[in-house]
Image 1 (cartoon, rainbow, N blue to C red):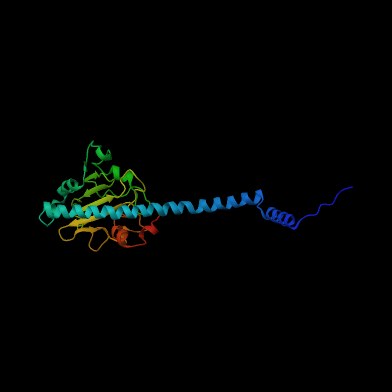
Image 2 (tube, one colour; image 1 turned 45 degrees about the vertical axis):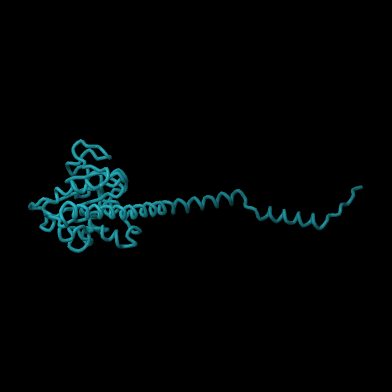
Length: 251
């Protein structure tokens, strides 16, 4: 005959707890479905997250590059030109600017030091390297007179448009300085994203492009819809002073 074993209350409690845990556990199918949902959400949000991180880096790089450029500009104005910049001699100013960027030198011809690009004497390099603010190819080559790579990874371009039948009168005899805040070797290489223009004149000294009376204005050269090759050169002021600018960059 079988003997009856009396089950204690503690054993009954443990059995009940184990059964409840087993009953409430996820099945393999449920686990796989959950992981699939997590994967879909990550795939949807990760590109946006990475894009936001990149834009934060570009914003910080612009502020740093602008600070350095402002300091260099003041040294050129005060130490080399006695406090007054003669805009007509702006083509030669590039040599003074390079002098105050530690370890930098002008790129040109076959010079490849500091990562200088191979084609700096024409617009070919800039046309092939940069896009406009809204992603159109063949951005205008504003800054093709001279360029240098600095030791902190910034590329600096200098330009003084020549007066001719196709050059607007307000563009002639002005020095334009364009900075690629993370260097031409690194993306996104778009105007108004990592490429920003400044204007230097005797009257305004150094002015972020897009401010009043500068060559390229925000309404014309910082547009989501413009197909102009100069679109993006007028975004600098907005990039510096609009706190939401980098949050809303076109992809």
